[in-house]
Length: 226
Image 1 (cartoon, rainbow, N blue to C red):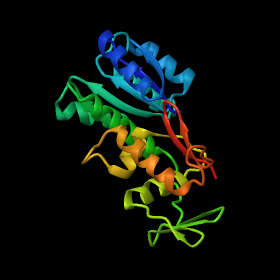
Image 2: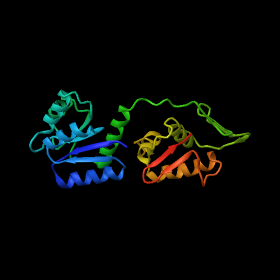
Image 3: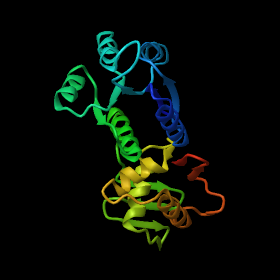
Image 4: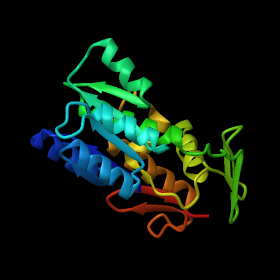
Protein backbone atom coordinates (compact mmCIF):
# COMPACT_ATOMS: atom_id res chain seq x y z
CA UNK A 1 0.00 0.00 0.00
CA UNK A 2 1.43 3.36 -1.06
CA UNK A 3 1.53 6.22 1.43
CA UNK A 4 0.45 9.68 0.26
CA UNK A 5 0.90 13.02 1.99
CA UNK A 6 -1.58 15.71 0.90
CA UNK A 7 -0.60 19.27 1.84
CA UNK A 8 -3.53 21.60 1.10
CA UNK A 9 -4.93 24.54 3.09
CA UNK A 10 -8.45 24.47 1.64
CA UNK A 11 -10.37 22.26 4.15
CA UNK A 12 -13.05 21.01 1.77
CA UNK A 13 -10.59 20.04 -0.95
CA UNK A 14 -8.21 18.44 1.56
CA UNK A 15 -11.00 16.31 3.00
CA UNK A 16 -12.32 15.33 -0.44
CA UNK A 17 -8.88 14.29 -1.71
CA UNK A 18 -8.06 12.38 1.46
CA UNK A 19 -11.37 10.49 1.38
CA UNK A 20 -10.99 9.72 -2.31
CA UNK A 21 -7.48 8.33 -2.04
CA UNK A 22 -8.35 6.33 1.08
CA UNK A 23 -11.22 4.81 -0.89
CA UNK A 24 -8.63 3.77 -3.49
CA UNK A 25 -6.76 1.97 -0.66
CA UNK A 26 -3.90 4.42 -0.18
CA UNK A 27 -2.58 5.27 3.26
CA UNK A 28 -3.16 9.01 3.49
CA UNK A 29 -1.51 11.66 5.66
CA UNK A 30 -2.70 15.28 5.60
CA UNK A 31 -1.38 18.69 6.49
CA UNK A 32 -2.98 22.14 6.17
CA UNK A 33 0.18 24.27 6.12
CA UNK A 34 3.69 24.10 4.74
CA UNK A 35 5.55 23.65 8.02
CA UNK A 36 3.36 20.72 9.08
CA UNK A 37 3.67 19.20 5.63
CA UNK A 38 7.46 19.48 5.71
CA UNK A 39 7.62 17.92 9.17
CA UNK A 40 5.35 15.01 8.18
CA UNK A 41 7.35 14.43 5.00
CA UNK A 42 10.53 14.13 7.06
CA UNK A 43 8.99 11.95 9.79
CA UNK A 44 6.74 9.65 7.75
CA UNK A 45 8.67 9.31 4.46
CA UNK A 46 5.61 9.11 2.16
CA UNK A 47 5.85 7.59 -1.30
CA UNK A 48 4.33 10.69 -2.90
CA UNK A 49 3.40 14.23 -1.80
CA UNK A 50 0.50 16.15 -3.33
CA UNK A 51 1.67 19.67 -2.55
CA UNK A 52 -0.30 22.90 -2.93
CA UNK A 53 1.89 25.94 -3.63
CA UNK A 54 -0.07 28.69 -1.87
CA UNK A 55 0.22 27.52 1.74
CA UNK A 56 0.38 29.33 5.09
CA UNK A 57 3.57 29.26 7.19
CA UNK A 58 5.71 27.89 4.34
CA UNK A 59 4.96 27.91 0.62
CA UNK A 60 4.88 24.76 -1.43
CA UNK A 61 7.93 26.05 -3.30
CA UNK A 62 9.85 26.27 -0.02
CA UNK A 63 8.68 22.84 1.11
CA UNK A 64 9.88 21.34 -2.16
CA UNK A 65 13.18 23.24 -2.03
CA UNK A 66 13.91 22.17 1.55
CA UNK A 67 13.05 18.52 0.91
CA UNK A 68 15.28 18.36 -2.15
CA UNK A 69 18.12 20.15 -0.34
CA UNK A 70 17.76 17.55 2.43
CA UNK A 71 18.27 14.85 -0.19
CA UNK A 72 14.69 13.57 -0.10
CA UNK A 73 13.77 11.65 -3.26
CA UNK A 74 10.04 11.50 -2.45
CA UNK A 75 7.80 12.00 -5.47
CA UNK A 76 6.19 15.46 -5.47
CA UNK A 77 3.12 16.47 -7.47
CA UNK A 78 2.50 20.21 -7.20
CA UNK A 79 -1.09 21.41 -7.04
CA UNK A 80 -1.88 25.07 -7.55
CA UNK A 81 -4.31 27.65 -8.84
CA UNK A 82 -1.53 29.26 -10.81
CA UNK A 83 -1.50 28.45 -14.49
CA UNK A 84 1.38 30.53 -15.77
CA UNK A 85 4.19 28.68 -17.53
CA UNK A 86 6.81 30.45 -15.40
CA UNK A 87 5.26 29.05 -12.21
CA UNK A 88 5.26 25.54 -13.62
CA UNK A 89 8.88 25.86 -14.69
CA UNK A 90 9.95 27.11 -11.23
CA UNK A 91 8.18 24.20 -9.54
CA UNK A 92 9.72 21.61 -11.83
CA UNK A 93 13.17 23.21 -11.55
CA UNK A 94 12.91 22.95 -7.77
CA UNK A 95 12.47 19.20 -8.12
CA UNK A 96 8.74 18.55 -8.50
CA UNK A 97 7.94 15.44 -10.53
CA UNK A 98 4.62 16.65 -11.94
CA UNK A 99 2.33 19.68 -11.88
CA UNK A 100 -1.46 20.02 -12.01
CA UNK A 101 -3.37 23.30 -12.16
CA UNK A 102 -6.64 23.99 -10.36
CA UNK A 103 -9.42 23.46 -11.20
CA UNK A 104 -8.60 19.86 -12.05
CA UNK A 105 -10.29 16.54 -12.57
CA UNK A 106 -9.93 14.27 -9.55
CA UNK A 107 -9.81 11.37 -11.97
CA UNK A 108 -6.83 12.95 -13.75
CA UNK A 109 -5.08 13.61 -10.44
CA UNK A 110 -5.59 9.98 -9.42
CA UNK A 111 -4.25 8.77 -12.77
CA UNK A 112 -1.19 11.01 -12.47
CA UNK A 113 -0.50 9.70 -8.96
CA UNK A 114 -0.70 6.10 -10.17
CA UNK A 115 1.53 6.87 -13.15
CA UNK A 116 4.20 8.51 -10.96
CA UNK A 117 4.17 5.63 -8.48
CA UNK A 118 4.30 3.10 -11.28
CA UNK A 119 7.29 4.76 -12.94
CA UNK A 120 9.10 4.87 -9.60
CA UNK A 121 8.86 1.10 -9.14
CA UNK A 122 11.55 -1.20 -10.51
CA UNK A 123 10.41 -2.68 -13.82
CA UNK A 124 8.73 -6.04 -13.61
CA UNK A 125 9.79 -8.89 -15.80
CA UNK A 126 6.78 -10.08 -17.76
CA UNK A 127 6.91 -13.88 -18.18
CA UNK A 128 6.74 -15.46 -21.61
CA UNK A 129 4.90 -18.46 -20.26
CA UNK A 130 3.16 -19.80 -17.18
CA UNK A 131 3.08 -23.40 -15.94
CA UNK A 132 1.25 -24.73 -12.89
CA UNK A 133 -0.53 -28.00 -12.17
CA UNK A 134 -1.37 -29.28 -15.68
CA UNK A 135 -1.85 -25.80 -17.15
CA UNK A 136 0.49 -24.29 -19.73
CA UNK A 137 -0.04 -20.73 -20.95
CA UNK A 138 2.18 -19.20 -23.64
CA UNK A 139 1.90 -15.40 -23.61
CA UNK A 140 3.93 -15.07 -26.81
CA UNK A 141 1.59 -17.12 -28.96
CA UNK A 142 -1.59 -16.52 -26.95
CA UNK A 143 -2.12 -20.24 -26.48
CA UNK A 144 -3.41 -21.83 -23.29
CA UNK A 145 -4.03 -25.47 -22.39
CA UNK A 146 -5.02 -27.60 -19.45
CA UNK A 147 -3.56 -30.94 -20.37
CA UNK A 148 -4.82 -31.53 -23.91
CA UNK A 149 -7.79 -29.19 -23.49
CA UNK A 150 -7.53 -25.75 -25.09
CA UNK A 151 -8.42 -22.84 -22.80
CA UNK A 152 -10.22 -20.17 -24.80
CA UNK A 153 -8.78 -16.95 -23.31
CA UNK A 154 -9.44 -13.57 -24.90
CA UNK A 155 -6.54 -11.23 -25.65
CA UNK A 156 -7.50 -8.99 -22.70
CA UNK A 157 -7.61 -12.03 -20.41
CA UNK A 158 -4.09 -12.97 -21.56
CA UNK A 159 -2.89 -9.42 -20.85
CA UNK A 160 -4.59 -9.29 -17.46
CA UNK A 161 -3.18 -12.66 -16.42
CA UNK A 162 0.33 -11.81 -17.63
CA UNK A 163 0.33 -8.60 -15.59
CA UNK A 164 -0.82 -10.35 -12.41
CA UNK A 165 1.66 -13.20 -12.90
CA UNK A 166 4.51 -10.70 -13.38
CA UNK A 167 3.96 -9.55 -9.78
CA UNK A 168 3.32 -12.72 -7.76
CA UNK A 169 1.62 -12.15 -4.40
CA UNK A 170 1.52 -8.38 -5.08
CA UNK A 171 -1.99 -6.99 -4.61
CA UNK A 172 -2.98 -4.88 -7.62
CA UNK A 173 -5.90 -2.49 -7.34
CA UNK A 174 -8.67 -2.45 -9.91
CA UNK A 175 -7.61 1.06 -10.95
CA UNK A 176 -4.02 -0.07 -11.52
CA UNK A 177 -5.20 -3.01 -13.60
CA UNK A 178 -7.39 -0.67 -15.65
CA UNK A 179 -4.46 1.65 -16.31
CA UNK A 180 -2.11 -1.15 -17.35
CA UNK A 181 -4.44 -3.32 -19.43
CA UNK A 182 -7.06 -0.93 -20.78
CA UNK A 183 -5.21 2.39 -20.63
CA UNK A 184 -6.54 5.87 -20.01
CA UNK A 185 -7.64 6.63 -23.57
CA UNK A 186 -10.69 4.39 -23.38
CA UNK A 187 -11.29 4.27 -19.65
CA UNK A 188 -13.89 1.66 -18.57
CA UNK A 189 -15.22 1.12 -15.05
CA UNK A 190 -13.77 -1.08 -12.34
CA UNK A 191 -16.62 -3.52 -13.02
CA UNK A 192 -14.80 -4.31 -16.26
CA UNK A 193 -11.92 -5.76 -14.23
CA UNK A 194 -14.26 -7.80 -12.04
CA UNK A 195 -16.03 -9.25 -15.08
CA UNK A 196 -12.78 -10.22 -16.79
CA UNK A 197 -11.40 -11.77 -13.60
CA UNK A 198 -14.61 -13.77 -13.17
CA UNK A 199 -14.33 -15.21 -16.68
CA UNK A 200 -10.57 -15.71 -16.41
CA UNK A 201 -10.92 -17.56 -13.13
CA UNK A 202 -13.50 -19.90 -14.69
CA UNK A 203 -10.86 -20.89 -17.25
CA UNK A 204 -7.59 -21.06 -15.29
CA UNK A 205 -8.75 -22.33 -11.91
CA UNK A 206 -9.67 -25.97 -11.39
CA UNK A 207 -12.31 -24.92 -8.85
CA UNK A 208 -13.32 -21.32 -9.69
CA UNK A 209 -15.51 -21.04 -6.59
CA UNK A 210 -12.49 -21.83 -4.39
CA UNK A 211 -9.57 -20.34 -6.32
CA UNK A 212 -6.01 -21.20 -5.37
CA UNK A 213 -4.16 -18.78 -7.65
CA UNK A 214 -6.30 -15.84 -8.79
CA UNK A 215 -7.26 -14.38 -5.43
CA UNK A 216 -9.65 -11.54 -4.60
CA UNK A 217 -8.44 -9.03 -2.02
CA UNK A 218 -11.73 -7.54 -0.89
CA UNK A 219 -12.03 -3.80 -1.17
CA UNK A 220 -8.77 -3.48 -3.10
CA UNK A 221 -8.27 -5.76 -6.11
CA UNK A 222 -6.57 -9.02 -7.02
CA UNK A 223 -3.32 -10.94 -6.71
CA UNK A 224 -1.76 -14.01 -8.33
CA UNK A 225 -0.46 -16.61 -5.90
CA UNK A 226 1.82 -19.24 -7.52
